Length: 207
Image 1 (cartoon, rainbow, N blue to C red):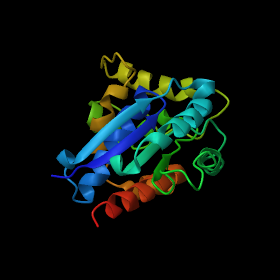
Image 2: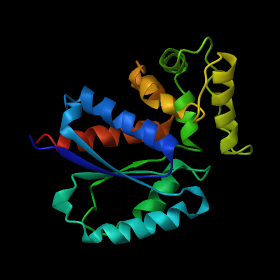
Image 3: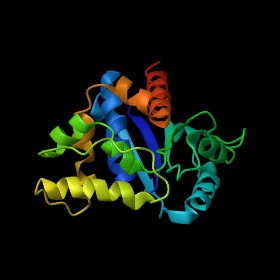
């Protein structure tokens, strides 16, 4: 059975858990079995150097035969720069003659991936087993990424649920319990763009 080979460039464990879970879930909705997907995950160190790391990554994979990879998923937090501006910045490094041009799906959680974890209160509550889910947090830049991390940690603490990774180990359970992607997409343009482009890319693999 031919597999759909997906290469990932991700910032950290929090992105790895949520983004790969979304890919599996959307693939399932597009009638693509999990066994047909091959995930090749490359993790950056994140932080201020992540854009430099992405630029080097794109430069170095030029030598990879495009036929060996069906498409590339790139996830980098918006960090309050905005979804569209971040994608333009990233896409500038994938030049017209690059073998992966037209084969990249960008995920830009803005400002941070933890906000995506918290968007669906029902999925969060059922997926983790919380007694009460926190309210969906508003867009917050001044307090940084720790703001969203603290909301997630506090929700776990309030329900006496232990976590070694601050809740990110529950990513797949949360994603599996999302019932209405359309509703979440209306709340978050970056989420909507990622899901739409991902669906289109997966559908193109079935032709």
